[in-house]
Length: 393
Image 1 (cartoon, rainbow, N blue to C red):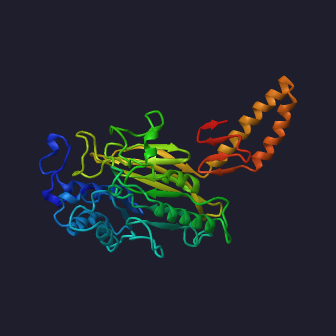
Image 2 (image 1 turned 90 degrees about the horizontal axis):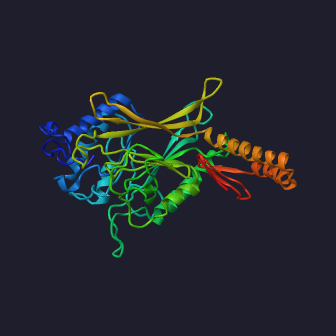
């Protein structure tokens, strides 16, 4: 939001005819419109909630920035960006204030964890529908992490990153949640999906071009840390995170899939934040849909979808896409089985190669032992790895 001092803080990068009277209050109005249009169950703020250098009083600015969420009586959560601590509160002080606000589900740090970098590392568990067989299990896991502000290592310049202590906490938390979900009673066959939220983009966000993402990429580069934290690899290894959402780069609003994880921006939201005149401020919506069972009950999350809304006259919806579906992993396995097996049958039938028939027999054994994680198929003999629509032999 880059919220400053409210009505006295002017807008940035808007058209000349929008400038008169444009201020932080335009940001607040956009939040109100989004809440009324979508009626969400949870609101997430991905950092730079206030623009510290233009916020005379951090407490007053935080209260004003989050006021639309508070007045809606909807639960909300937040992480810190690289500007939140530049006013009259320390980074820890800002997060403590956020934790204590009405309807906030934010946490200062995980309970029982004595050593962890940053402030605002926590997870939220979304339980199954009350009265259903999954009401005592978390069917959707939300991870929030502090990506820091700026490097504290003298020899490394630039932005901060998610540290090993935070990744260790994430690994332990993800493992615990996966085990609980797949254990009796009502043990499920695979882990519940997860979503991750932090402010500064990972270096892997630079892996995309216009051919393999949905949205736009208008920044000169990805404003990530100058070192690779390894957190993307950590998420891939855990296997439950299906999408990660960041702020920081205001002119990027794309979502791209890499190794089964969608890496997403939302695009600039706040009117005191830098933007692009004529390019509407925007916000991202995420929808997790539950599986409706035959007897009328509700089960696991069956799909996660997303779209964006523009702050224009009609709150226009753009770039709707599916981030994950429960059936995608099964379809991937079937695609490999059919494609690889039919190719071998053709080879055996028309070339008469005995080796092809022998390999065909082994394929069925390997397929039965295959593991599917994060929409990636890894065969037990490691002969093929398939992710999304690509296959590497």
